[in-house]
Length: 401
Image (tube, rainbow, N blue to C red; front, side, top):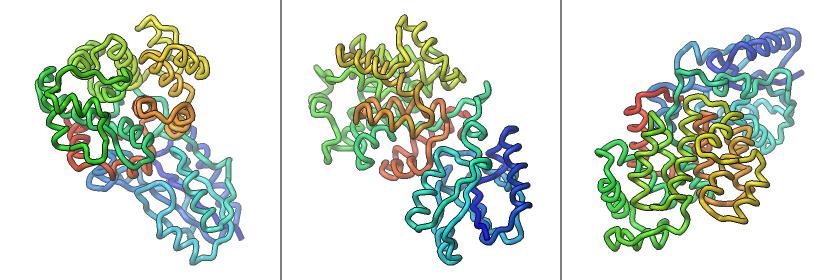
């Protein structure tokens, strides 16, 4: 007799195309006999850990949480607040002595990859029912954006930083980004105030684990005089929150000029930061991925190709911040998912600047950062940083996914 696992097949995830898949799955369930039947439901609410920890405000009301597929009499429903299988589900599969199980449902942000890995550890053979799987293109969390949806969570920049350090530690660039967020939220946004906040953050988070660049640490210790960070593109790396914060292109220009003049006061540094922040802004206001390069090329009079190898060669021949920005944009536009972009970026170069900016672009477009990645990274952040992220979302008063 067959066993089946139906993953997160809930009303809040589905659109019109997905409803056709649900209809066919209901027929399949009606016409076959099953032994063990498991349903998973993703649950979150205003007070839940998903909102508190990752600011995800997805399916939180009763209608959104409701199963969209028929529930068989012998079916067991398991609530969960994460990707993959929970310990309760794993224990149930073990107790039922399941050796083989069919899998279908919502494969949102590579959820199935984690489930398959867990089943492999349990030595349970998975049978993928491809006709009854709803992938991102049929899922509300990855549908084409609507004009009234601008999302604010700010996870990408520090995730990219931690990825470049094997999840173990964030660097000075993450600290600079959070200093920038505090500057945006709590000051009149003057250059002097930003410099003061940088010095304050250096004292608040001292260089115990060598997380700061030596020159940056020396600059702060010497009263912020005569300083230049070697890599101009690091300015784009720490300034990505500006792309999420700004309401207009001119506001991006103004904010980049004020903060980068303190740390990365060169034409190339500021231009590369603008390229990244403009791209984030355009994606926030629902520019299609396929149109992004043409818009950026027109704005900055560039000729960015959608060919990663050519952009890498261009950078190798001329290692400047603008060519680095071209690589990042190319990684993003050729990616299919958030995790796919990370994979491509890592293969190109295990570089914090590339990963941070790539992840920020992906967040602006894909919206749905994998929950397991966020949890792994956010657990390593100080409480002050977590509170700033929460405050940022509330102050901006925009939809949180």
